[in-house]
Length: 629
Image (cartoon, rainbow, N blue to C red):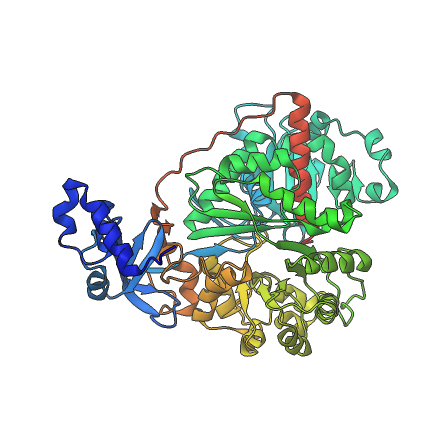
């Protein structure tokens, strides 16, 4: 066969196309095959967005005022003049609607729980903190009387006397004990369910108990541990008692319709906070429930994409064969589509207990001498780590205490020595209590950190006197040390454990101001620019998506968050007050004040199916809760 040189190819192509008489004149004026191609199939129209400032997080061009987008991808960045010069004769349009705004890379909700958020956000929110929702801000409850008054108003607003009233956010440590009798004074006939702020406790009035079929006889049949964590007289169920009563009360708290409404609210909430991509770690392992979530989150009009990370703990405990564990993990990819996906080659494990309940495993004793908890037996944890490590997965580990962190780092070191891997990016998730010596070990082992800075805001004051003492409480979430050591770190909210608001997370990390107004661990504060990286490019890096999203660079998805002000230039104490205009997601402009299309969710076709759906939904929510409390 004779060789086909580039010159011969051009000649052959030109001769063939010249036969097509309508294009003959045009071809006569071209000099290359690419020129000929654009005459036959014109290049797509480019949209050039201009802004007061565009913070790219690209070290080569950190601040520009124009970005060119084509087919949902970034083509060019720079000054408007440079961008237009580079485009040459390609068709383009200039969109200057952001000329008085600031564009930053699209915010990433790296670690949130949409089903749990949906159930809490669709409740009557009466909580210890303000919740700024799309329809307005729900102010924090001031005291027990304020809670009672507002819940009474919510009950009175119901037109259906059989409709359950579910409220979320009550905190006994703030407002005092709450019992069935308290709720019966509000209504003895309308079912009322109070889901505590911690999510691990629920109080029911007499009507809710009756409709749910919860009787003293039922409670007497619980196991000893379940009975110890139940009080029928008070209508109160917590921990194992809440799991035991779940089949009876789940249909009151988690209908398909309520899930849909909550997911739509969660979607709109996150969009209003500038989110363009999100992830649920420890994804749902109930296909009907995932289908219900997909009805909203997979819809083509979703304003952001969402991925789900497999719950490796449950998968390992379910399947005794190592090969089957990976096979079943990979089979989950068929559950998603449209705007949802399975996070590829990533898995979630759990080390110790949670920060909110002071059940993390710590090196030095808690002030009252109580013991923390392990979320997985060491043998299960080591097996799971080995299985996913050998399969080449990136492992994300929920860990809160310094003794818990020792266990994770020991497992990582063992597997690195046994089966070395490059760029494994094992993620230390939450990172509440750690020690200075562990920072160097994290560097040496190549792990990275996903931190929740809200722990300091919400808990440092309380834990200074209860649980940890002032030194450990104030050094929680030591991302200052981590940053100085050159470790990649990102920020997450764990929504609804903290408000899913990237600007609020930035504010928390930059200022470390507690509920009392003091600064906890000033040496652990970080710069505003680093905090912005923590909710954009570093969050993308933690999900192995840094080549796709997280910064405004050529070739990446055109994901932008549009702000009224530059969060790097405002007073650090006002970062959380910067307004979000909306987002651009893969080139689609999405103001936050435009109503999204409501998704369609078909309810189960039978009462039994409805109960099963509700139980599976609430069961997943409580599983998420159990890992955080």
